[in-house]
Length: 171
Image (tube, rainbow, N blue to C red):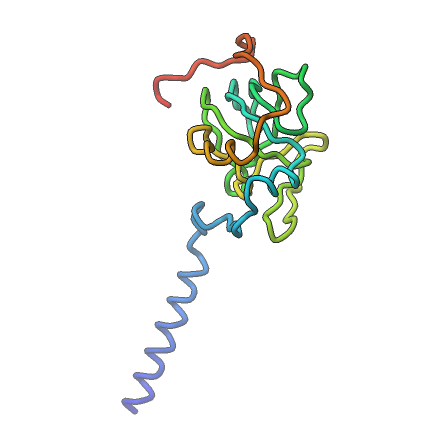
């Protein structure tokens, strides 16, 4: 009788633990898993656009950037571009206002380097920036820039866009 009681107690505890695990939300830190991506030159070939830009505004997944240099995909007469960076829980890259980035953008369907995982929220016609790309703050992209070689074009600092938002003191 004692062994059966212990057995039921163990089973009950395992079932309760399992139910607790199933009800705990997955944290943002493990919501997106990226495999090791390619080096800078291969990432350049795979991307639709590679450029350096400063974030001018952020609006519900859309990021408006002033473009300073471009290796691929941005015509020389384009000084501002809007890209889509979905919520980080959907593997979108997290941009910060007024920061400069080296951006590797795809054709609207973010990819991890094992293949496309798709994003049903990606608007057609927008370049998309994924957490799984090599996109990084410009200060962290110096090695990439060295390996990418000279850009197709480089601009002096563009005039400030009318869409620039002032950074709030709370950020």
